[in-house]
Image (cartoon, rainbow, N blue to C red; front, side, top):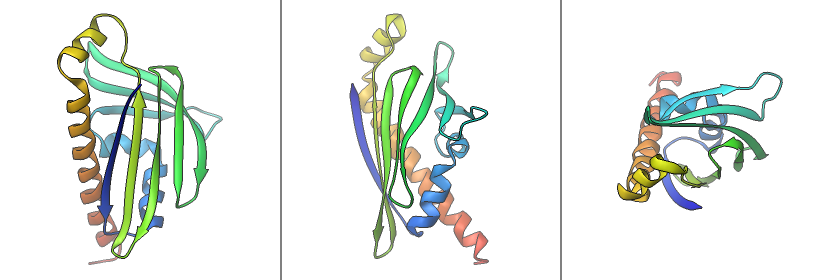
Length: 150
C-alpha cells in the first residue's frame, strides 16, 4: 500500500474542525479530486466515494468508518472498489487544532495502474493532499469567522 501523512494547523477549535471533517459529504468541497461522496441510506458509517481527474482516471469505492472518537479521531477503510484506508486525527494546540491526515491505498490494476506509476503518483498525490488540507484550512477559518460575525 502507498501511504501518505500530511498535517495542517488550523486557527479553529478541535470541535469546529472535527465537526466539519466528520460530515464526509463536505469532502468534495474541500478536496477537488474527490468528485462525489454519497452516504449510503440506512448507515451513517458507509459511503460511496468517486475520486479522480475524470475518465479514464476515475475510480470509486465504498468506505466504512471503522472508528470515531469525538474530537480525536475518524478512521475508515474501503469495503469494495479501490482498496484504501486512513484516519484523520485532531490535536488541540495553543492556536487551535492540528489535523493529521493519513491515507493509504493500493493502485488500481491494468493500464490505469501502470500509467499512474509512470507519472509518479506518490509525489503528485502528496502535493495534492497538502494543497487540499491548505484549502480546508482556509475554508474552515473563513467559515468560522463568518459564523462568529467577524
